[in-house]
Image 1 (tube, rainbow, N blue to C red):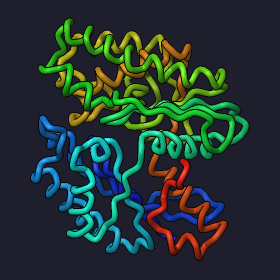
Image 2 (cartoon, rainbow, N blue to C red):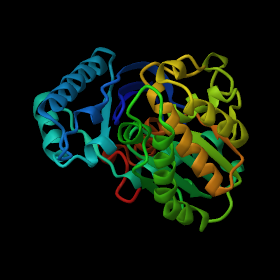
Image 3 (spheres, rainbow, N blue to C red):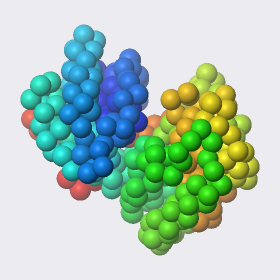
Image 4 (cartoon, rainbow, N blue to C red):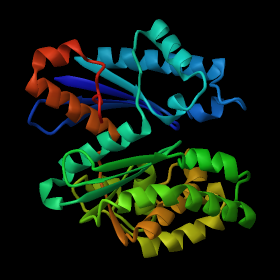
Length: 326
């Protein structure tokens, strides 16, 4: 079975096609994405502009056709923080559906954290014990912790790398005053979320997911992508602190020269580093392990679980991709 997952995030819109069967590891088949940066189309009132709505609709239609041309059996489509926080998010989703036929499901931050956690659990297995997952997106930052397939606690805070960069950093290089305000803001918003996570107990394994964490780990010396997904990629807090301070003195163009950093994300890497460093410090975590699976893989695995348990019900409810209580 070839399944497609279309993820409308704050930075990118990404279609991933995987060959997947119940009980087997999903195998990537093809990928189609664009750096849409939907957040740049949000106006002062918090609404997505008509231009942003239309650009999104055009790419969703393109992704639909790409999936069909590559023989996808099903397309699971969802939207995260950029849509759920927009004042006209429902209207944008309805417009996309009416023009493309694709039903984008809006998922909450807590659902996002829970589904990503489930993918991390599958990757590392039960022997990992209690897992804490940290995920930095463009609009939000998620944390989830637990001993089972779904987390005991899952929280989402509006500390995405694109959001913070747009709000606090206004030039190629951050001013000291901008960095100070950024750190104060991150610390203030993280404090109650960290307390919720710490109440569950100490993790046996702390994991980082998302492109931001992969890039930060690569900056800190982790193995490059071409060494494959099974190479351990630890990121140590000591190294992250050092590189975050270095990035404070760099321009965005200079950050783009760092290993693992794309030109499109270079401006955001300082904010991502501050969030990761602050969270690890507050949680008392010295090392995170990078996981190649995240939200998209979690959605696919949840879909396969439903097919395995009740194939007919799963076929009749293709939009129910994250569950009622994720």
